[in-house]
Length: 197
Image (tube, rainbow, N blue to C red):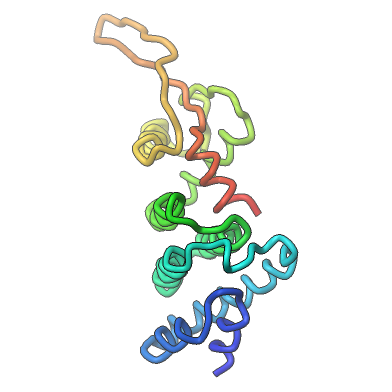
């Protein structure tokens, strides 16, 4: 099967993973993986001299991360998220997967599946500005302020951004707390491993 050859061509995957997956997956899932590995192979071709030796990885953690990414790709329909998973896979081959960073990489795979494109745009915007940005100044193609605040709050809940009080305004009807967002170290790492091409 052509897809099995593509999987085996990617460093560190091996025939055992190919046998495990292709013996039981539906045609649609196989097509998603085929497309994923075809594009991943092209991506890796550009950075092949940077790929770490298999001996630099913790084998169990690498296989578990690959397994996690496979499970996500099999059901993912959004092209940008597929690209983010490819970036995570590729960057994990460049920067070895070890016991001490496995949970972070697995967390990144989980975050990709849970967030939507507006979340990713906010992260990229905060990476580009590199300064505290008032939440009221974040704009997303005409999205309501309350929706943007929700996206920002979710990003803070995932630890990708930090929110700080900018000021508090008092009004006869109550108070308004204005907050600023800034990317966290975890958010920078997520951007590097997953969003940055």
